[in-house]
Length: 224
Image 1 (cartoon, one colour):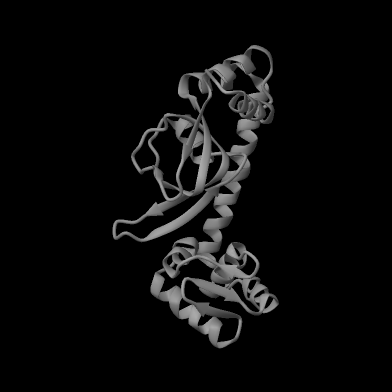
Image 2: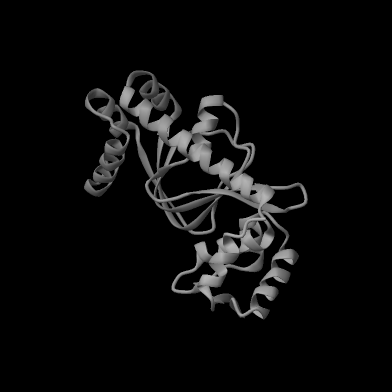
């Protein structure tokens, strides 16, 4: 039996997906909430998509893992977002090509494949909401891949530092930053040392302090 709080949460997602009437009732009966700890691998390459996935709280980092263990972050599915890669797998009936790892504690909603298919066919509002989000996030993936292919390492690293900073402090390892920008850890370490020499950042044990935010933003906007 669903708790009142869970029913409210499921209702919120139903609102976001423009569900009403019988479609809303079917969604409410079939949707399930799941909670995962931080750092858990919840999706593995080759896994089939078990159903529609919507992240309610926290984030799931979708990453490509190379044969030699190199990791490249493709995108994040964050709070109040459906997983566009799961949706792609549901459309194509192909397994996941990526790995998904939780960042922070994650609460997620899942919807069985059969119910997703029925709603997509029978509920125009749901279909429009799914397709709108799918097209928007595919665009985000293309932008991220363009940056990885064409922008310089200093520009990509500067953007990653600015995006990850909380009150001027970045709590990411060199390996995590490398995965974020699609580079090698050694390359990132060398570039961080150069930023530190120029006074843009200060390297501390376990953290990176941004010392010259405006200069770092100019670096981020420099592109190639």
